[in-house]
Amino acid sequence: MLSREEKEEIEAAAAAFPVRQSVAIDALRIVQRYRGWVPDEAIDDLGELLEMSTAELDGVASFYNLIFRRPVGRHVILACDSVSCWLLGSDGLMEYISGRLGIASGQTTADGRFTLLPSVCLGACDRAPVMMIDDDLHTNLDAEKVDRILERYE
Amino acid sequence: METPLTANIRSGHEPSDIDAYRKNGGYRAVLKALRSMSPAEVAQAVRDAGLKGRGGAGFDAGLKWSFVPMGSDAPRPKYLAVNADEMEPGTFKDRLLMEGDPHQLIEGAILSAYAIEADVAYIFLRREYRLAARRLRQAVAGVYHSGLLGRNIIGSGYSLDIHLHVSGGRYMCGEETGMLNAIEGKRANPRSKPPYPQTSGLWGKPTVVNNVETICNVPHIVNNGAPWFRELSHTDEGGTKIYGASGRVRSPGAWELPMGTTLNELIEEHAGGMQDGYKLRGLLPGGASTDFLTPAHLDVKMDFGSVEAAGSRLGTGTIVVLDDRSCPVGMVLNLERFFARESCGWCAPCWGGLQFAVELLTDIEAGQGRMEDIDLLESLAKMLGPGHTYCALAPGAAEPLASALKFFREDFERHVHEKQCPWNRA
Ligand SMILES: Cc1cc2nc3c(=O)[nH]c(=O)nc-3n(C[C@H](O)[C@H](O)[C@H](O)COP(=O)(O)O)c2cc1C
Ligand code: SF4
Ligand code: FES
View 1 (cartoon, each protein chain N blue to C red):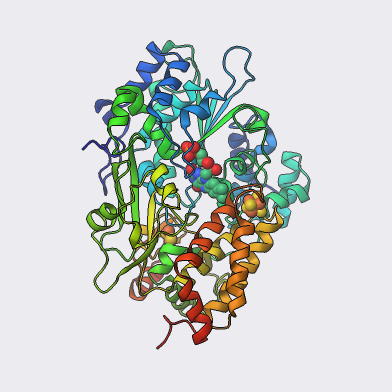
View 2 (cartoon, chains in turn brown, yellow):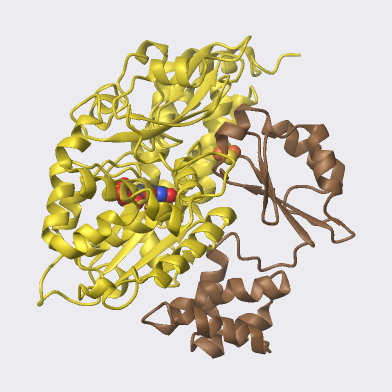
């Protein structure tokens, strides 16, 4: 069941469009903000609310890589693996983060604290290498800095 | 030297709020346009200025607007979509403009919307730009509050709503027609053209898509006129440009400079030259989907025409520098992996071709490639080139690949002969 808050926010977002179904991506994101990810049952409920088939809505959801269709950890790390960061050693850094957390890219730690995802260029190439954790951008990274940053996320 | 786009931007400071922005002359162009100019006159000013789209393709903005049906018979509502997706690897200029001076973008959006008599504007922002989202949201609210957005703006009879739309994430969303589908809440596959968005875009209505930097230029053109705008440039392509550089340079960053500033000035003066112990091997002049240039090209003026004449594209104008201690094959592999991952899968040459290119490059980089693989890559680059696919992602992917095979061929061959990456030797 969609919560009252979820429904209200979706209705408010829908006002920006002349066609109701166009709010689909906002709706998915609103659900994700409350639940961390978008489970199947939410796809069903949203389909009903927006008068869309489950397959159609799932097709939309799966296209967008920041809509999570699987559970994620309490904090999501987006580690840039694009070209400017690569030139400044992001390969090694990704390996280091993987090692520190004991997970491969794409996985979630056993304690549910972090999910590690590779990311396309984060638009901060002049401060490479960079990553985001949740809504925070972290720049000019090295191993030592990564250690200090990770500690801040419980 | 005038720097109109960044005059209000002070790094590390909060951007001007609406009062401070107005005190510095902000929204004067909107008042001027709505009080004393017709939409056609605003469009003509931009046309006369020769403003070229800053999203990568350099299409004349005023010309694009001229394809929109105008007047009382035109289909309604009409739309403006501001392309704030900025996902081209190596590019970070629109972030600067949105975080640094959100009101400039909103003022430009109001004027651009007015020029095509749009009823609604969407700012399509990538999800990761959280600070820009917060600042834009706050700025839009301020503008509504001051009466410069909404119904019947300052009694002019013109009405406009602006909505901030945050993306679900994917490079394809930045492609003009992919973005239209994304705003409509669908998968961001591109649409086949014609019809063009200017006549049939969002929900089948006339729509113009312009890049953030393109739109930020409009208030200054309306205020100061086309001759002033043309004077800003070193060449016959008007205006300033937000250039940038990343990679192993001493001072990576972004700078507003006259259009047509040379590569050499950008790298040596503004980026501070190469870091100690690193030499310049090559560069992508404007993001991942532009052809490599080499140190032999340092005299090239960075405008659309000159970079094209040199065999590449200005693209987004943010340079990615390849140094002599990084492997060119590894860099191309990184680029093609990105394109392969982001391909939407609609066209066989793009989807299959990019997967295959990544396999071949992975083998070569690992020292397991054959000489024939290099020739195969060459034919793949041709197949990905213009004319075979629905959108410009594949041709964009072909550019760094084809040019790397041209300029760094011996590095590819060394990988094959030495059966390892020469840069990976312990
Ligand atoms: C795969 C792909 C991604 C693109 N991404 C962006 C982008 O993030 N921002 C942008 O302004 N233009 C992007 N473009 C270019 C747009 O299609 C379009 O040309 C541009 O937004 C038009 O604005 P302009 O004329 O003001 O430059 C992209 C193109 C392709 C093919
Ligand atoms: S060129 Fe690639 S990204 Fe563009 S439509 Fe075709 S498959 Fe999709
Ligand atoms: S390449 Fe990493 S932020 Fe742009």
